[in-house]
Image (tube, rainbow, N blue to C red; front, side, top):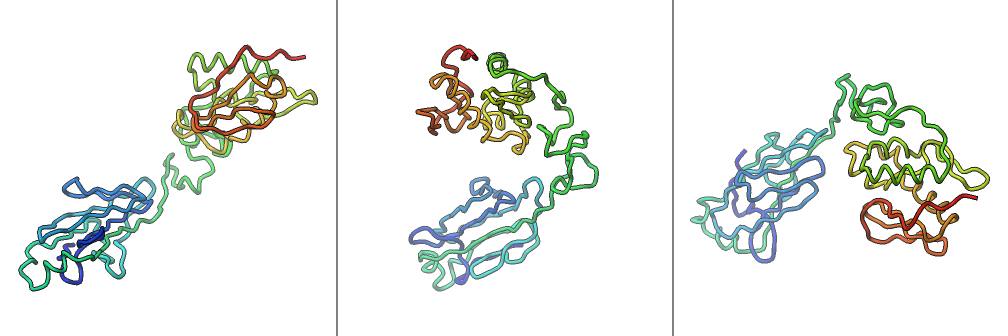
Length: 281
């Protein structure tokens, strides 16, 4: 669909010229034919139009789980209601019309915005969209309990022996040293976080190595399985053993324990060990 811009449709705004605002919603990106006017998802991109030589094609490109529906309609919107994913905006040759060049030099704006609809994805090909499927990778483990809900090849043993707090800390440090992230993720899931009456951590899932960092390192890690509040609880227990011993970093914040209070700071990394694991009484 080609839109020839006239005195009622020039393009989008900056300060004192005709302009076109291309709006990309969360469902997709906008690719320009020239590759110089692309607009990424969740962005508003403005392009000045200073003469009657503007000619560009904008194609709506849906992201995974979305489909292009149509171009938005409304006052100032070009390609309104078009179901063609490509919108062509051009004012070439209109400069000879009386008043057009003055109009282009003015402060006017037009818009182009594709609309996308969520259709979902079907990771395991079982005919159920992931958002409706309790087991997206069809590996027999429900998504809510699956560390890797979209990858049937990544699993963790069902059970681990109980560990004391010191044992867990030694194992965790060793796993981080080897950079064996799968071991860390499998061993320190928060689904069995328990404190006994002495404040000792029990279970096979006592400490998670850097909640956010694991989410970044493991593509597809289930955020329902790895929870940041478990980190905070663990840090409080560590403080009760040795206030200056551990600093927990999750890739965005650094939880430094000061006077029994966890203080959030900008930081990166995993877990910084400030000494040997504390002795248990």
